[in-house]
Length: 211
Image (cartoon, rainbow, N blue to C red; front, side, top):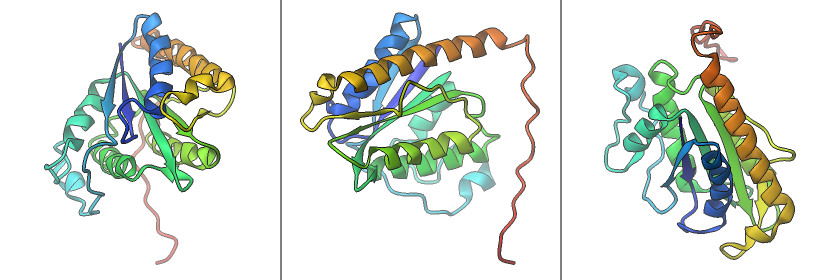
């Protein structure tokens, strides 16, 4: 089994990375391979809403001048996905949002590629705004029918300078607990394959409120 974590911070070893590392360390203790992909220091354009990924269904975004398509394939090949972001004005970092908009649009346009994968989100913040950003990340997981492990509080950890989150004792416990629960859920899913049939996938119903 493998979990891929996406670091939305522009700082490769900032507090978001430390938060993700706390979770992946627990996963690796359980024999689950992990990889952290650095998203936040890349130039990533937002979704054009062109619909080409839905039309072509080739598991690619039409924009090919950044690593988004590479990251989509990492997501596809992983058993679990971690999304991590710093907080900018009570929201996730802009590059991370652009990546997620495009990646999840591609995934949804190609047979809901992330359906029933295990996914979780973590947020690193100096003081406030962590919960809105955390909810924003969870929206992607929920929309994609992913399975979400929980911790003993919301997955938000506090610190300003790089590495300062390691002093947030409660936050460290939250990340550690999340990692253990995620490993447990991944094993449940793995052991259930071929034994418990997943629910049938329904075709998406689209309805506009104004006609």
